[in-house]
Image (cartoon, rainbow, N blue to C red; front, side, top):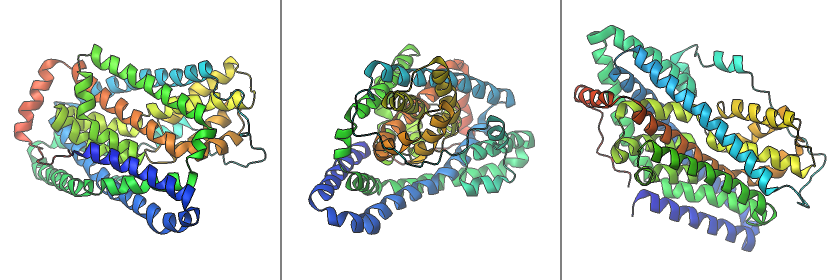
Amino acid sequence: MNLSTIVLLALAAGMTFGAILHEVLPTWVEPLNIYCLDPVGQAFLRLIQFVVVPIVFSSLLLALTRLQNASQVGRYTAKLLFSYILTSIMAVGLGIFTAIVMHPGTGTTGLVQAHIEVDAGAAPDLIAWLVGLIPINPLGALSSGNLLQTIFSSALIGIGIQQAGERARPFVEFIESIYAISEKILFLILYTAPVGVFALMSSVIAVQGIGILGRLLTYMVGVVLAIGLMIGVYAVLLWISQSKPLHFFRSFAPSLTLAFGTASSNAALPVALQNAQEKYGLSPTIASFAIPLGTALKRDGMAVGQGFNALFVAQLYDVPLTPSLLFAVVLSTLLVSFSTAGVPGAGIVMMATIFTAAGLPLEGVAILAGVDRLTDSFHTLLNVIGNTAHAVMLERWEPQSQSQSDVVELRVLPVTSEVETG
């Protein structure tokens, strides 16, 4: 069996085991979760995070050394940012539209909880966020795992490598070694993926129980439907750009199943880079540039989910859906979606920020917090689909001669791998 099948089986087994623990052996839940399930799941996530930064840093640097000049970097970035904003607006709109049509919060009883204090967090500050993209120390950006600052550092160093010419060749060879070593480490870590996914899902279901799905069934169905509609939009966009949607989903199946099981875009990033080059056949230059950038910025799952969440809470508390409320939801969701960390649970903090900006009751966060980890898997799945789809469409958007030049450059800077993930 390939990696995708094994991870899906581990996911199903984890849900079953967690449900049995919660319903049949409730006294075992706390000790098993504290001393076994949660530590194993967190250890797996930390192992994945161990290779994320070196792979992003080295692959992005190697991609920048293949680009012809700084204007090419600017063209790639401009095209990606334009398409990111456009599809993010579509994602927020689909989340709001689905909530308006389904009315998941209308008539729901037994969910409204009063007098629950929730930390709203700080409102997003666009200027501070933009300034924060510039690291004080490039090594500090790498050690802290800040992907946006790592990407900024890679861009500056990549431009410096181009200007230095042959004098930078020893450093480039060193970066190639880092990339090759990181891929081998990733290959070893992927052997533990089924165990990690099993532990993560067992922990969630054992603590929360399947019963929470019954109380929030309409909400869950609505979230999944909205995410499914956005995935359909990407399938159409891939078809329009002649990017073979079926081949796309088959090629990225390992990274998509890992994203679903871990609810972490960062965890799926190294596998997505491998799938893009080895299975889909995407240009290494574009894959190494676009996919790390998308992992740091592109959050369609967050955009769909938070738009839906805001309307659900508004309906739950009978808050009128005025144009000003809808505008506040759309604007705050867009800003937050571009600054959310790609780790499990980040959506809860961002949910509170959006509710505050829109003037919605913060008690809604407490109601949705219990099911957030389950919906987070679907959000992350869409995040990775959107990110990789934009990378694929960028290649179609570029002139054909550019793809051919990538192949020529690869003969000079070979970055290949014998690792198979499935």
